[in-house]
Length: 364
Image 1 (spheres, one colour):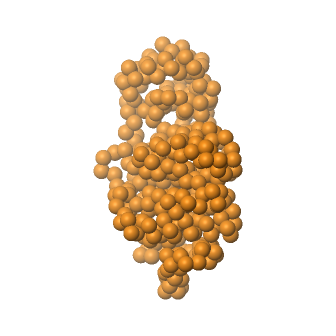
Image 2: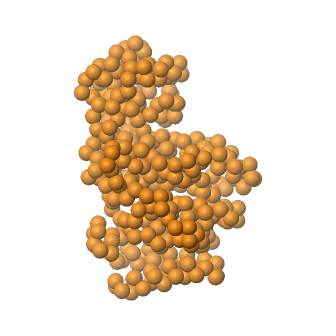
Image 3: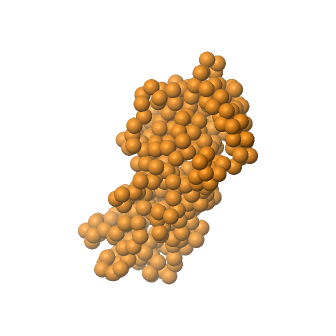
C-alpha cells in the first residue's frame, strides 16, 4: 500500500513534565477505551494509520504541524500503557534514540514476565528488519532516530518510526507506519503509510517498490553467481565513475566493501531479506551492490518517492489544505466513543472531548 505528503517538523526534545504527565494519562485512557470498545488489534490498526495517529497527537494537545508530535505522542502512549499492558494485552517498546535501541530487550522482557504468549525472537527479528527496510531499502535521505514497536500478547504488531534528514539544514522529518496484518512481504511495499514532504527529495531509491522486484532478485543472485574478484572490479568502476547520486549515499571505500564482500561470499544471502539483515549491509553498501546488479543484469530499481499521503483532515488555517469536515466528524465520532468509555475521573479526557466538540461546532 502506498500512502503519504505532509511535512513533519523535527522534535526539539522539549515537553514540560506537567504537560507530558497529562498527555500520558489521556493517551492511556484513549488506548484503553479503544481496546475495551473494540480490541487490541483495533488499537494497532489505528496507530498504523498515519491520519489517525496525527489526529491522536492533536487530541493530546499538538497542532497538526507541531514539533515533536510523533516522538512525544508515542512516548506518552508508552507511559500511559505501562501500568495497563498486562490487563489490556498491548505493550509498547522502543522510542527515540537510545530508547529505540532497547526495543529487543523490552520485547524479551515482556516474554520473561510471562505476559507475552508467543516466542519473542520473531518479534525481535521483525523489529530489526523493519528498521533495516526504512533505513536501507528505502533510501530517501532520512536516517531513523525513532522506532516504536507496539505488540499484543498474541504477537500482532504495529511500528511507528521516524527519520531525520541526512543532509545538513533539513528541518522536516519523515514518518513510516507498519501493521503486521497488512504485511504480506516485509520487503515488498509493506507500509500502511509514509508521511513526509515529497518535494524535499529529488530522487529516492525504493527497493521495496513493486517495480524493484527484478533488482531484489538480482542483487543476492549477484553474490552467488559472480566471482568476488569480478564484483570488486565492478564496484571499483562505480567508485571511479559518476554513480554516487542522490540522497547523499556515496559509495564506500574499497576497504569497507572488501571486508563486507568477504562476509557475503562466506555466507551468500538466500534472498533480498537475508541480504538486508546481514551485519554491515547499510544504505551505502546496499546502494553499491544494487547499482552493480543493475549494470550486470540490465535491471532497474524504482526511483520514485513512495510518499503519497496527504493529511486526512487538513489544517484549521488552510494548510496543507482546508479541513475536510465530513472526514473530521467521522474521526471525532470514533474518538467520542473511545473517550466515553475512558475511566471516570479522567478530567483530561473529558476536557479534550469538550475541546473537540467546541471546534466542530465552531467550524460546522
